[in-house]
Length: 395
Ligand SMILES: Cc1ncc(COP(=O)(O)O)c(C=O)c1O
Image (cartoon, rainbow, N blue to C red; front, side):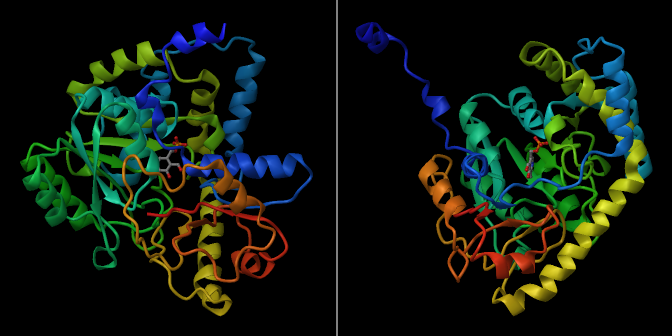
């Protein structure tokens, strides 16, 4: 038996991507809670509020029908049309419903985008620091993440100069940008985004825009790349603004010539997106007043943090332009690499989660999520008593 096992094919090299650290931390925290412990959750970018009431009501009504069937691979037509209308209402840009693809969260959107656009070996530029799964998904798909270091001088955002410099060194085929960004919470101004899209496309580089935190913009209004180019691939989600993380539903806006390739991929990879979540997402647009109230709560958290943290000894953090993250004392000393995670060790996650007294001086480079509306200044005071999780992005 053992001999047979030894002869079997081993887990693939591509599966050896680093863990998504925040999920390891979540799991470690869950173990503490299962054992009767109490944890203050600040690790995961997850709103504390539930999905909008109309979404929940629509899902209940759909369940009552007793049939939850597959849908078209690209999504329920009514939902695709409603998302297209959202672009007209919010950004005054006309997007044909045919260009909308409903996805299993934006996470599936990345897979569909990368698979439909890039051959193995393709190089894709990413801002560093950035959301770790970008580079891990690319690596798993045989593509090469090209990390472009950012700094305070550019609000921790990718610039035309940095992108073109990397491209001149060795050509990149794609660039992925997020505004508001995770983990920094910083945003790119409209003019800078327009310049980036134009520069990328002039060089034949495909522009991918992660707009998952749109709607949660405080410093200035976020601009969609759909306003700037029909060739850009936009990835968005119901997870954050609509508070629907666990429903696992998002969407893409794709160029007309990418609709069929993405449809073929989705048909084969997933058949369709969970129907109940699609029904709920359609109704979620009727819950915008509720969601605006949630957003105002984040704004209040943001104010409390900005005003209160210096008094708790945290006087340096990145501009909190959008999303619900605050990165105190950000000093990304170590550079991320596609194969080097923040930490590969679940033990590290457990250390973070179970430390009953986190150090008086918080870890440098910690990103804390304020989406859970916990009084974060209270957190700073309480942290000696209650295990506190953070998403320790270390680069
Ligand atoms: C920047 C960014 N993009 C994408 C995602 C994935 O979100 P989802 O798959 O829930 O849409 C997250 C989740 O935290 C994120 O922070």
